[in-house]
Amino acid sequence: MKIKLAPSLLAADFGDLRGELRAVADLADYIHIDVMDGHFVPNITIGPPVVNALREGCKTPFDIHLMISEPLKYAERFHVEEEDIITFHLEAVEDPWPLIAEIRRLGARVGVALKPCTPAEALAEILPEIDLALVMTVEPGFGGQQLIRSMLGKVRRLRELVEELDAGVQIEVDGGINEENIHEVVAAGAEIIVAGTAIFGQPDPREAIAQLRRAALEPAPGGLEA
Ligand code: DX5
Ligand code: ZN
Image (spheres, rainbow, N blue to C red):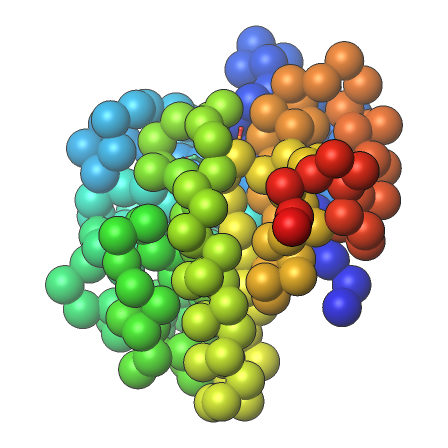
């Protein structure tokens, strides 16, 4: 399976977001943007005006990860294109169906994210209607955390559900992914890999992307796999 890499701007220099974006855009499959409201998660980042400004002139699709309490209210503020994904948290909505319809109306692809405590089965009913399932491999809110290893089982379970339903949903992982563990998350069934610190926290983000792609193909020497 060919993996897709989504560098997360959360770990980039917020004083030079456009420069950071341009530095990696041609090597990235998606640009992952974390939108946080200080309510759904205990952190605040950027919102539609900044995301829309960055979107202009960037050919790489955006993967907009909404960690906000009222995603239905704010989704339309994002200027999206056909290949872009808007991902909301299942835990943030009482009923996901109106938001799925709203994101389709806006012309984007639909992603649904699960916090670590939400089981894969919570997505069973909506899997046939969405394009992407995001397994948070850390508690959402901050970059630079360590991957919660039990989430690998959730990725495997989700992969089974996707295959049982023949749903064609892409599975994405987000949080604590690095050169040492990327092979394991891919082996568990993840296709889109978000990485913040492992890319923008490195001296050469372009080289870091190349290293992650290499590491995804084979277990890291001295890595965590038994
Ligand atoms: C965390 C965010 C992640 C974050 C990942 O809530 O959703 O996208 O940027 O950062 P790293 O890769 O540093 O764990
Ligand atoms: Zn994210």
